[in-house]
Image 1 (spheres, rainbow, N blue to C red):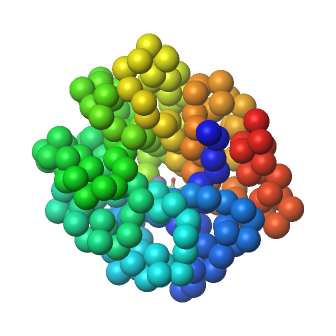
Image 2 (cartoon, rainbow, N blue to C red):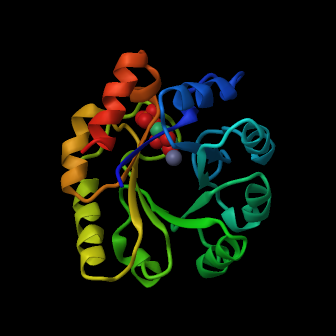
Image 3 (cartoon, protein in one colour):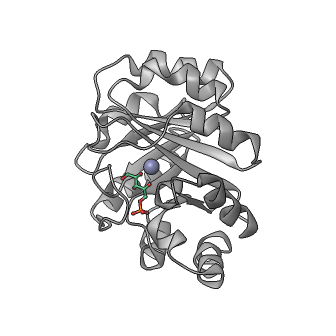
Length: 217
Ligand code: DX5
Ligand code: ZN
């Protein structure tokens, strides 16, 4: 399964439902929602009420990325808001296992995220239980940054572990992803391509071409 997941961080924050509509009209199945607290990352985005309101009008798969210092304190509100998958970062200090259990016990898919400079070691104990590994290909906080190609070395390693039966997770990349990165990412075992700027800045034809270069492989 190869998927382009538009990141609505790149949308108009006064009308985020429009960003979802664009994705739906384009035939996308996933949408990526970036939640930022201004502590773990140097930016603020939106919270559970926004997600809950967007949920009311959309059947898309809500891929919710918590860029929070204390994600464990916000699992319940984002579950109740209608998340289909919740990804949490390894870098902050909290009980990762308890947070993953809480997401899973609520019937929501689980994801673990690491930043470009975080090694994969911390992921290894969880590979047999998570649904998704998310590799940040920028230092998180803002859209429109430059894709860090070196991250794909880590994706290749995690992809190899998957073929060796260490888990049954999807691999996702997020940050600076454009059409020129599709082939290197596919070669590194990537399944889910989060794209904000490169997706929403294109017109209908451009968006469709970008998505189909991923989803029709
Ligand atoms: C962290 C955010 C961004 C966003 C996508 O900064 O997670 O990576 O989703 O960014 P662009 O617009 O570069 O695709
Ligand atoms: Zn994200």
